[in-house]
Amino acid sequence: MDTASGRSALRETLHQRGMRMTPQRQFVLEALQDLGHATPEQICQHVQRSTPTVNITTIYRTLELLESLGVVRHTHLGHGAPSYSVHEHQHVHLVCHACGRVQEAPREIMDPLAATLCERYGFALDPSHLALSGSCRECTGQEAR
Image 1 (tube, rainbow, N blue to C red):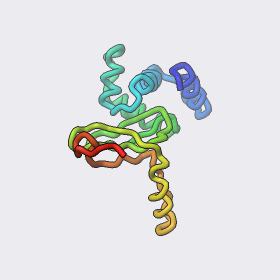
Image 2 (cartoon, helix red, strand yellow):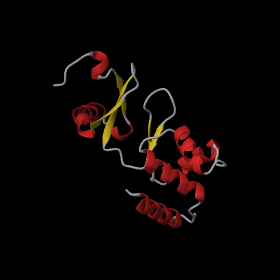
Image 3 (spheres, rainbow, N blue to C red):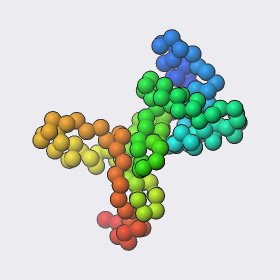
């Protein structure tokens, strides 16, 4: 989604719920579109480059609102703050706990596990919020298959 269509979609979503597009909401949305995946702190730093008066509390409140509206999603990539994105996660995050590298794998890679969880436990897996921790190829020294 490009910046203009994202802004337009957000404005419409807010309007339908009786809210308005504030500059802060627009700044956060644009920062996420520029950054892809970002923590609240990264978003705040990005926004503060052009608007130094926006603080981290405003960023957190805005992200909470945008997530409740279904405009952004978050994923926990490790022990730190969640990472937010405006795009529907069509991938699973693979986080190397040795070097910190984050790779993306297609969601379908989790289909066998999702089927097992559903069959055995009646549990419906949502892999869009999933990050798997381990070691990347470079850190393990393994060749690609």
